[in-house]
Image (tube, rainbow, N blue to C red):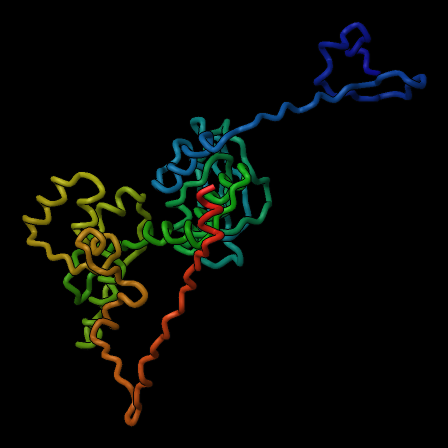
Length: 319
């Protein structure tokens, strides 16, 4: 065994790797090395709740990983002022297309090597992933899958099984807004954040008039901000910041069309789901022509047996 590991230092060398450089003669039953047993820690769901809050609030990590924006081959550059240069050359190579340059701290651990092929959205360095970067590079579908998988991973570690549809409802509301990049012939302003359905309706109106529709990019909002920016001011006011929400609605002269579940529950109306959907409200069901309703069914009363008291039974009760 290597001379750097004498037999007198067994306790100090339990976590060290043993290298055999020359043939060594050992006897049966002699312990050559020991592998330390990993200490497993039990965690409860409270340890994962901060991670759940971070995902649902769409917070930007403190030290996020660097993500490649293009498909290509990795090439390392020089280290300048404590920053390492990483180039990603697009594939297939196109004339006039310059490689994508990323500058990362020199001491940060890399996940790629020289000559590795990466795809758009792959991490180049270690660290947590910024969901906003995934949205920008890979689109809404990818960030939906990322949030769904990360939330399920937290609950899966605790043995909790949750159907994807419950998390999907929350993630859908987080991506309900879009930011207008090109207003064109619509009434929107550049940089304005609007609801996805309102954006679609406005574009449909403009296209019917042979106009040019607006262009927009998806926006990822946390559940708190998404709840406060909903179209219904009744729903937003019931969540938090009630005074500010009602004041803003009064100044704008807002009108609530009661299209959601929450505002209808607050007012006391039927929720717009199932038989309570608005398009079913005016339906009048009539029987077909010539249909005669059957006569009402008359149920005969069921006779109730009356107990018969005999003289012998009365004498037995008195005794």
